[in-house]
Length: 328
Image (cartoon, rainbow, N blue to C red; front, side, top):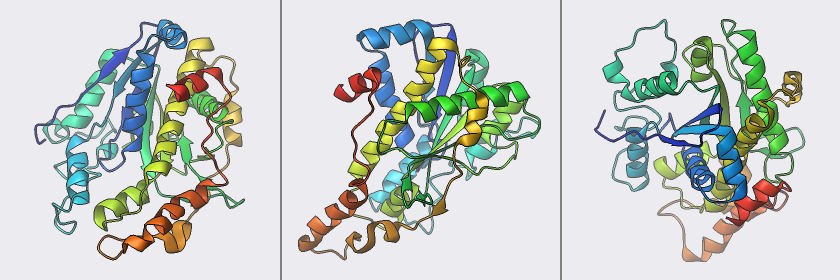
């Protein structure tokens, strides 16, 4: 709406087709960073990357709400007033792009050029699967462990059962791919069946779509709206790496057998998402706010990030492909 370009990149020449879309909501950043790291690695010269390119063709549309992201950046910089600024999760017409996917509802395409561009790419590329990356708030499971990623397949009754089953297989592939990533804790996103949401609306139209929600939304929102100065880079980097590994898990599974060897019923074993935990409960007294801190509190602020990470070290996975990515 404000003249910023929308991008797509295609890598590979394999018969299986995967599409990844990130940042329908402008304030949900980490999926975009993960997708860019994935594109850099997958287009490289390593034997593993070359092998995957022969098996899978990947199309990526990163940051499909650039206007919302620009608003988020300006809020962080203190250049916009949160009280008078359109929510950065929405586009410049104040429309939630992830509520525009019911093809039975007529929406003026000139008001949602971002969603229209994604739809056009879907129609041209015709992927077997689309991964839709978002950020969510923080949740804790019954064991007192922070969850880092939640996923969900189409749940609308008008989605063909075969599409739902394949999306569940992709969910299982992600679950298996993250098993050895000590920072990652996977859960089932408690989403509804409304057809306006991408995973349902696109699924109704015949393309299976899997929703991926990662931790970090509250931290990103507080940074924009309240001037949070706590350094979130360490946790953000872990979430980005988790995103890359989840993407790779799907690509590897598609390239090996197209999910044929995965039992979709295993998806029902993914635990439900736990209870929401507030930001100040996670970081406690280490929270540091803009304009209210002193230099002497810098070490305390850093400690606020290190504390939850002590029981969840970032050590990567034991898979050779993932290790190669970590080294890169």
